[in-house]
Length: 286
Image 1 (cartoon, rainbow, N blue to C red):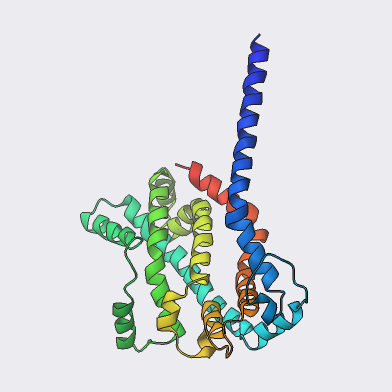
Image 2: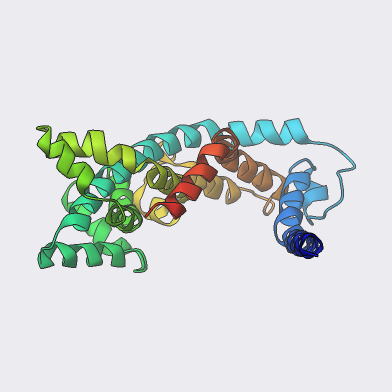
């Protein structure tokens, strides 16, 4: 009797799980799969055929022609280089500085530092202050430069890292740090050899979110980067989409969007297991 009941419960659980997957699939098709298919299939079409984007396959293929135009006229590799120049130091900087700050905030009892923590965390929901930032960069002689843009991104993206990492560290036992200090480690050695390894799951997940956010940033880049030679991929896409003499060429715009997203897709496919394990460990620890 117990066996039959257990089998019935298992079958019911399997049924509900399959039903959830079915519902999620039904929702995903119109909201995820269909837009991606429209983006992909229209990037293969000629100008005339892609003037009105549809889900139909092209009657005349223009894949390689569109690809060549986007790479040459759309300055794709210039934008790719500049995006990498910006994304790498920003991600490394916010992870390092954010985790160091979070360690201090998590262990302090100072009201001043706790106030600083809340102000830093508050920056997540506050709108970006573009005009004051531009004024500060102008005073520092960094307006319109890649270095000024990197500093602006560092200042505006570090709040998320501090918020996530502080809560994570508060869930860790301080015995790890006490043991390191007993062994004669200083603050830097304790951070580098004890705290940082423990933070790998949450930092890896935070790095993924930061890369996506920085890679797709357009708002700050539009106001803070001058010259096509310094343009990141979102800016090269914007400039390319606005130079058409005969209206917006959707096939080329879609092709540029695909190429802009391609590095992120490749990185996700390669690091998928690390992303999922980092999210799982980060959610379970503490």
